[in-house]
Amino acid sequence: MHRTLALETVSKVGEEIKVSGWVNSRRDHGGVIFIDLRDHTGLVQLAIHPENKEAFAAASKCRDEFVLSAAGKVVNRTPETQNPNLPTGKVEILAAQITVLNTAKPLPFQVAHGHGEETLSNEDLRLKYRFLDLRREKMQNMLVRRHKMIKHIRDWMDSRGFIEITTPILTSSSPEGARDFLVPSRLHPGKFYALPQAPQQFKQLLMTGGVPKYFQIAPCFRDEDPRADRSPGEFYQLDLEIAFADKDEVVFQEMEPLFVELTEKFANKKCMHKPFPRLPYLEAMEKYGSDRPDLRFGMQLVNLTEELKQTAFSVFGNAIKGGGVVKAICCEGGARLTRSQIDELTEMVKKEGAGGLAYIVMAEDGVKSPILKFLSEEEKQSIISGTEAETGDIIFFGADHKDVVNKVLGKLRSTLGDMFGLKDPGVVAWAWITDFPMYEYNDKEKKIDFMHNPFSMPQGGLKALESQDPLSIRAYQYDIIANGLELSSGAIRNFNPEIMYKAFEIVGYSKEVVDEKFGAMIRAFEFGAPPHGGFAPGIDRLLMLLENEPNIREVIAFPKNGSAEDVMMGAPGTVEEKQLKELHIKLDLPKKDK
Image 1: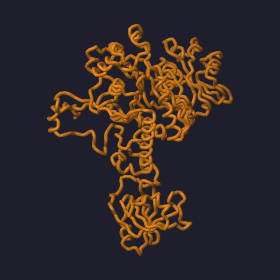
Image 2: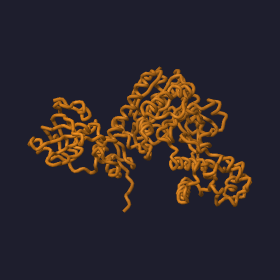
Image 3: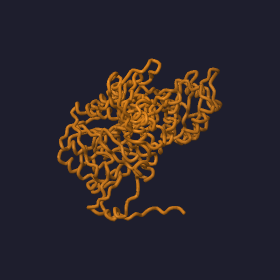
Image 4: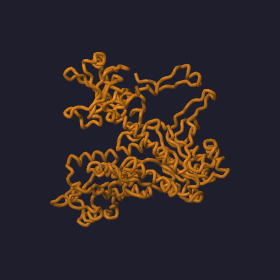
C-alpha cells in the first residue's frame, strides 16, 4: 500500500491507508491506546482497540521515537475529542495493523513536537545528538526554509543571466584574510593545499575568461574564532561576480531586487527602504558608531566637541584637550530607566573601553544628572538643543578618542534599541556601506595593512597610490548590511597589474611575492581583463536575518559548537601514525602542564 503522509489524512476519510513515522507520544485511555505518529508533515492520531490483538500488543510496547508503520481506516473524530490546534485534529486512524520498524533507546532530551525549548539549554548535548535534534519541529522547518531560500536565490540568479559555476576546493594558500585550513599533499611532500577562504581569485579569473555573470552557493573555509553570528571553520555564501561592472552602482542595481524579493516574498517582511540607502563608511561610524548599524531606528550620535571645548567638566575637557571628542545619544523615553539599569549599561560600556557613562535625565520635574554642577547653563542648553532631547528622554555621553567613543556609543545604541523594543522583527532595513578605507594601520605589527579585500580597486587608481597618504585612500569597497548584521563585503576589483603591484607594495609585498601568490591572476589580467565587481552574502547569516534567529547554529544542519568542535563526529580528532608518515608529517605538540 502506498504511504500516506500525516497531513494528507484529512482528505482520506473513509479510506484504508498506510502511514509511517515516529512515535511522538503514546497514551492509554480506558483500554484504547492512542499514538500520535509524526512524520515531516506533522502529527496524526492512531487509535488502537483491544480487539485488534496483534496491533494492540505491538502498540503496548511502543515508546517515544519508535519507528512505526500503521495501516487502518481514516475516520472523523467525535466533536468532543477533536483537537483544533492540530491540522489533522478532526480525524484519526483506526489502526488494524502496527509494525514496529525500529525501536529507540531512552532519549537524552525531548524531541516530540508540542514541547517547548525549556529542556534544550545544553547546546553541546543537542549537537552530540544532532540527528535527534533535527527531528524537532523548529529544526525541520528551518531545514525546509533554508532549502526554499536557496532555491529562490538560484531561480532568481538564473532568470537574470547568471551562470552557476563551481570552483576548486583544494587551492593555494593566500597571505591575506583569515587563517587558512591547510591540507598536506601526499604526492608532493612538504607542500600544502589550502581550503578556499572564498573563491575570490577564481571568480575574477572567470571574468577574465569571458563569463558575463557568475554565481555559486560556495563553501568557504576560515580558521576563525566562533561567534553567535559566525560559524567556525566553514560556511556558505552566495558568491557572485559581474563583468563590465565599473561602478558599484552596477552591482547595487543588479542585486537589490533579489534582497527585496527575499524580504517581501520569502520572509513576508517589510523592506524599510527602497532603494537601499548608501552610507559612506566614515559617515556610518560618525552617526551610528558602527559600520553595520541597525537602521530600523534613529538615535544617531551627536558630536558636541565644539560646544563643550571650554567646559569645566574635566572628563569632557581632558578628552577634548587630548585630541578626543565628546559625543552623545538621546534615547527617547529613556528617563524611565532605573538606577540599576543605568548601572548595568555603565558596566557594559566599561567592557567596551569607556571609563564610565555620564548621562542627563530629562525628568518631568526638571533636568537631573550628577554632572550638571560642572556644566554652565549655556553648555546644558547646547546639549539639549544638539540632541533634540525632550521631557522623558535620557542623554548618554562618550568622551575619549573618536574611535573609542564611536565604538562605545554604537554598542550602547544597539543595546538601548533592544531594551526599548525599537528593532521591529517584521522589518528589514537594508543598506550599503560604501567608500571603505583601502588601508588601515596594524598596531600589533606596526605597519600599514589592507583594511578589507586587497583586490579592491583604489579610488583614484595608480595616481592615488603614488601620491596620497595610504590611510587617506578610499577603495571601491562596500558592504551590504541589514538590521545590525553584515551580510557581505564586496568591491569593484583591481584588474590592472600595475595598480595591483603598487597596492601590495604599500603593505610590504614585493613584485616577486605578488607573482608567486597571485601569479595566475596577474597573468590573466595581462591578457585583457574587463572591469568587474561583485560580492558574496553569507547564506547562513541571510537565513538568520530573515528568520529572526539570533544563533547561527540554529540555521545549519550540522554546525560546530562554540569551541569549533563537531561533538557528534568527534572532529577535530587524532589520526593514525601511518597516515602522518604517508604525508611526511611529524607532530610537535605543546607540552601539557603537569
